[in-house]
Length: 150
Image (cartoon, rainbow, N blue to C red):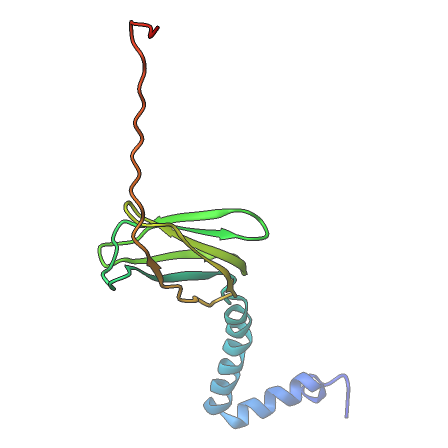
């Protein structure tokens, strides 16, 4: 092999081989180049967040719209709050993987808390909550005005 001849180098040998192989080889090389470029981008586009969703109902199974749902990260103490929609459904997204509590409350109902809800990346645990009827309490405050009792 003569090293001064460009066709005798490795590049020259490959070039001659590609010329003989034709369009099919070029197509394979283009596909290989595309894979090498695209696959790392796809791999890096993995989800890093999770979410929690569910339905808020009462003890009869009727949905509870406009219930306040609070999802709290147990470790960090941060929380996200949302309202259930007209179908009683709620969803809290973009949660960092961790352990959470999910609390729901609505006017006329007792507050209910579900603990140890584990959220992993790219998962959405379903947490349905049933609210019990709350107790009604009245407070009467009397302010004496004007006269003194003797």
